Image 1 (tube, rainbow, N blue to C red):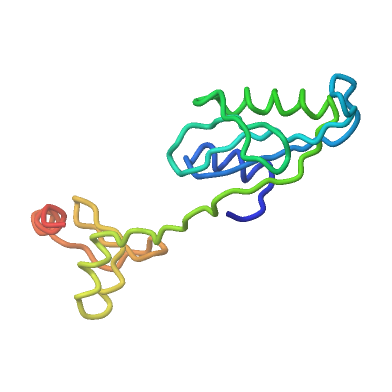
Image 2 (cartoon, rainbow, N blue to C red):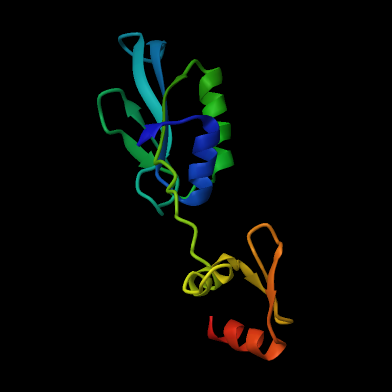
Length: 153
């Protein structure tokens, strides 16, 4: 995982990628015998494709897991409430987005086997109009031939 912005976290949540947003609190707690607290709260998706969940506990422990399947916006609301209580965000991580190579159009594979200037064909209509990348006319084919080529792609 890499350091991320809140936008990266939203995108990771939408894409199903793993992410973690962790907030910590260290300070006074009158309910504790020692009077001090040292705790964390986070919302995360630990593995790609899993549900978003909440994890919390003492700093230095794994903590407790609750709310499997919580929505991102509900988790954000809870985070804002934690921040109002004094928690500070200490970590935002997300799996990097995968870059996919664009698929090679079938027309491009077919045209690459032809001699110049026909190897520049990037589009072919059923009417037989063959165009290059900029949309300029390369040649005109009989409609029957265009239909045969398009049917084989």
